[in-house]
Image 1 (cartoon, helix red, strand yellow):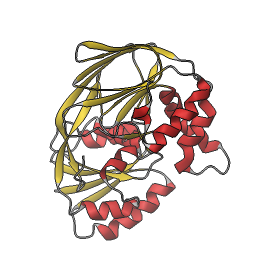
Image 2 (cartoon, rainbow, N blue to C red):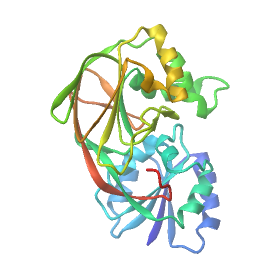
Image 3 (cartoon, rainbow, N blue to C red):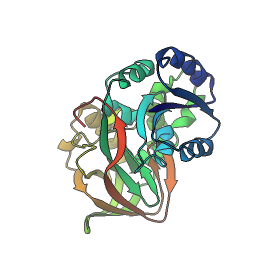
Image 4 (cartoon, helix red, strand yellow):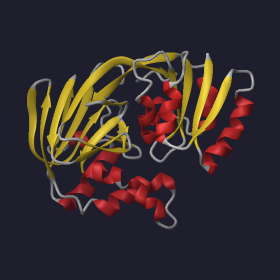
Length: 288
């Protein structure tokens, strides 16, 4: 099988690419430097044979590439070189992207679930409410002096949490309305982590054929940082304002945008459907 690395045309990616040659010298491989998300998708669409594709970047890069890998014979390796890297947190404790590449060469392929949202696909999380505001503005923190990339989500929280105007939603799960009213946040997840490392749905499995929904009712804005403490400590489920659901089909009616795996996404309504075993993921992690 051919190995294909798709990297961005940035200094960091070019430096990363230089190390790939030593690791992959005994394999049939190619490195492509893409200048846009459109170009990346065109590269994948032109592949004629099953290929092991290395997604080098963050959750947004992964979201773009997944669109043309779902329900194909291609295999996907997720290499963390982005801002949040939330989906990769579920797959491996290894943080060094080069080590992830090396270890992946001996890992098996696992068929995992993906989620279809209207005409898009994603593997990790789509969020609404204050979370979407934070996610949609996280890259604004790149211009804040002395802020490391790894802390971008925390800075975005501090910048945006008190600006949030509470959204009103109707959430339907498997044909039944499970929540109606204003929210602080809502997330429809396949994975467990989002927002730069917050484990919002620890019960989620990417092979169980279900989506995991977390809804937090409207709370006073001054209380949101307090709830964040519960989230960080893994005790969010203890709050009476927090609700969890599992479903195969979900509909969210909301007048506003969302954040889907690090990318802004807006529609008039949001229809989610789980797609069991629809993606060939290279991973050795058992608890998925």
